[in-house]
Length: 162
Image (tube, rainbow, N blue to C red; front, side):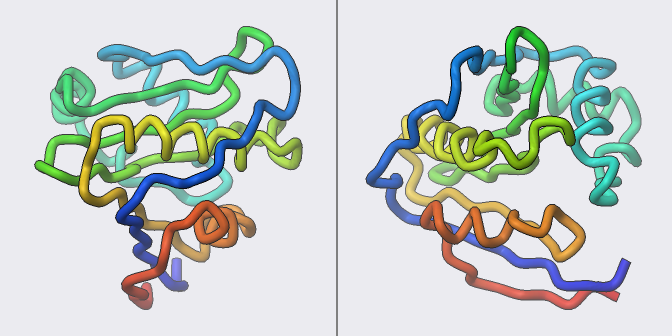
């Protein structure tokens, strides 16, 4: 799909924290999740935004990433059910990439994205990297780029997509 990919980064932890916007929220570290569970999260969150990178991976390649202790998957639980997820890749020394971040459709527009993004950034910075970064594109949710920038991430590169 044509559009633009934006690469964003930050070099210090966010100063403020965002309180949970409502009761019934928790975050669960899915330690070495199964490929099936991960694919469920990935497909449910990414289906409306054209996420394909992990869909193209073989089960064995994806499993090797998910089994790596330096790759973390955290699931936002809403009243006991998955509401979104974030994946933090800590495999590169001194930096953390937020490789996946998003909410399931029924949880968008409730303030959960802002809360969960700040939670994810604080989790990433608790590992004491020198840099946290991610990429997004014009195919992602319309508020994704704005939310990332409001959270303190700065664009350092824009790449057109054909």
